[in-house]
Image 1: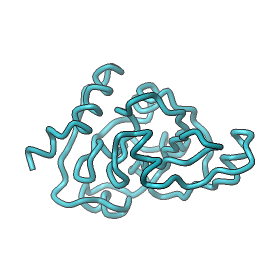
Image 2: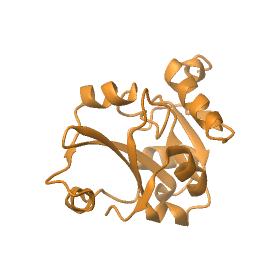
Image 3: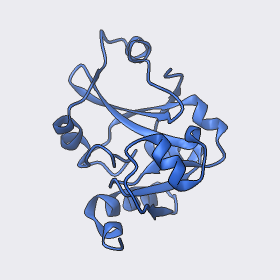
Image 4: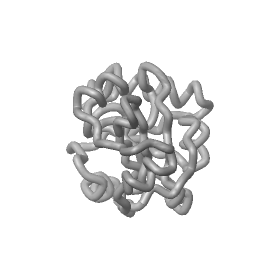
Length: 159
């Protein structure tokens, strides 16, 4: 499991956190966490404290939506907020091309180039937030304020 913490995608997330002035607090999970519920169970926290990193195709451009594990993204609402006709779920190839990371481990940062990011306002209610750290076995803890500052996210209602 130690070799997972040294994967290039995890190291890129740690470097991005440091560059944003955040001390990386990456944890390697014993099992992958394909859902927010699975991550919450392994971490012993509320599913609402899991920040899902969801990549969407916003008229050909990537959009990262960080949403509470307790919510689903209302794509129509987000599309209207962005002033575009529709927001569609991105393919695995689109996700990897824009993040350098595989679905299941997409972190909110550490991507080859910055991605426009929206963050679910309800995550502000959580004293500690957990997000993927670039690999399906890794997560990191943070706060809403740290995550907004590190990702330059716009706080919105996404559900």
